[in-house]
Amino acid sequence: MGVHQVECQFGMGIHQDKRQQRLGVDALGLDSIDQMIGKTDFDFSPPDMAARYQADDAEVMSGAQRKMVVEPHFSHGKRNWIETYKAPVHSEDGSLLGTVGFAHDISDRKQEEEAMLMRNAALAGLLRGEPTRSVLELLLLSLQYEIHGGTCAVFAFDGERNELTLTAAPSAPESWQASIARIPVGEGFGASGTAAFRQSMVMVEDMATDSLVVDYREFARVAGISNACSLPLIAPEGDLLGVLSIYRSKPGPVTEHQVALLTQSSQMLSLVMTQGKNTQRVDEALKTFRGIFDNVTEALFVQAEDGVFLDINQAAEQMFGVPASQLLGQTHEFLAAEGLNDLPAIALSIRQAAQGQAQNFEFWGRDANGQAFPCEVSLHPCSYFGRKVLIASVQDVSERKAEAQRLLIEHDLAAALVSGMQRDDLLATFLDIALRFPEFDCGGLYLREPDGSYRLAVHRGLSESFVASVAAYAPDSLPCYSADCA
Image 1 (cartoon, rainbow, N blue to C red):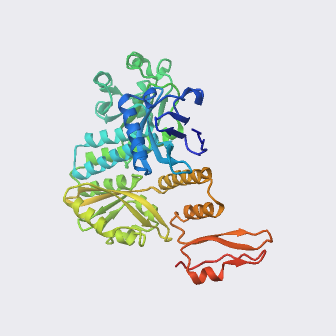
Image 2: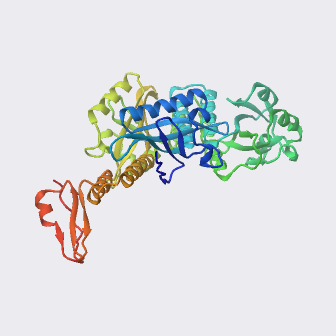
Image 3: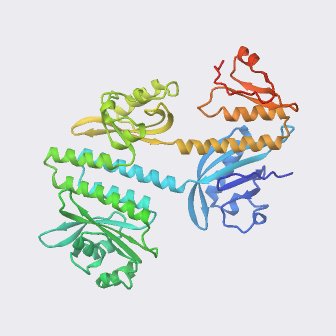
């Protein structure tokens, strides 16, 4: 059986025959394609994962249907998450050859999603009045997902004793917590004590040699800590609240991106700790909530149980390009792209969320310029200063949808090019692919004839009268039309 090799811009291209013999370019860490010939999923993945991969392929071949799956993938003993598009491949006579797949690594996206869930849980906990430590732990877990490695801890400043006390370290072993339970504030008392003393960020790139950590070298050696970074947590009024520290086993300095994440997290943690000191003052709590609400990078909407917007954060204003003053009192229908949403189904989701059932659904939004874009919405019941509400977290998934669309287009183009179809049929396929984009409703493709004139070779969605008026053009006279669709 001949094997067609398809070029794609993503990380993996795979063809499989019906015996699951993998032939293609993979991220398995092999030196050449030859090392893959004659092998199956069971040669590269744990048995349970390999069985799942083959079950997906069997389903695609038996049902002759395309399928998009998110599945774990193991390379060099490390698990990554791969989003894979699979589809059956047929010969010219219609017989089934096997499957074709396109895939790309979405591990970073999965970690970002986990981080978002943790931040949303922290925000919900803050609204419910949960203990400050619980909220801090969720924010630290969120940071650890985003920073890709390291153990984070928050210390509170005790002004009377002039020392730091460990407040939250959800991933730190108990042996660690005992060793860093109390740290004096001053120069040379580790990264944390020094950062509190200087009230500025402190990086220790080598725990074995840096003079700031002389008293903590044995702790670092036993714990396997290579470096540390600490940032002071400062209240809005300028008072020292504590310190955020990250301990890493991987050698090397903290990157600029990681520093930006630590800085952003330190601001949110400072606001949470401030709120913890002012739980009896509602006005101060509202101010603190507003600071955290607007520091969250996801678009957030606080909705009454009937769907009316009660509050909107800055990220939501930026996503839709509409100020909060115009959104308050409106519902999701105000932001919905016309004709692209199932509004009764969304109304049902809102009612179910109000009854305590968290909801997730897709939504086509419309920005201030009228541009439609796809979103994913997570809807959770919550308490908003004593009132039952819904928290809607909205993500713009335009890039993800575009990537999925490109995967489909690459497959269809590859299938069309290797199928040997006639020119007009190939042009019809190209036009059908172009019309998948929501910006286009109808269109046509012209062929240039040997004499330089143009002939309308294929069209979709055009009225008969319009087609009759634009069927052919003289040389060098093809205009550009804005046509009414049939």
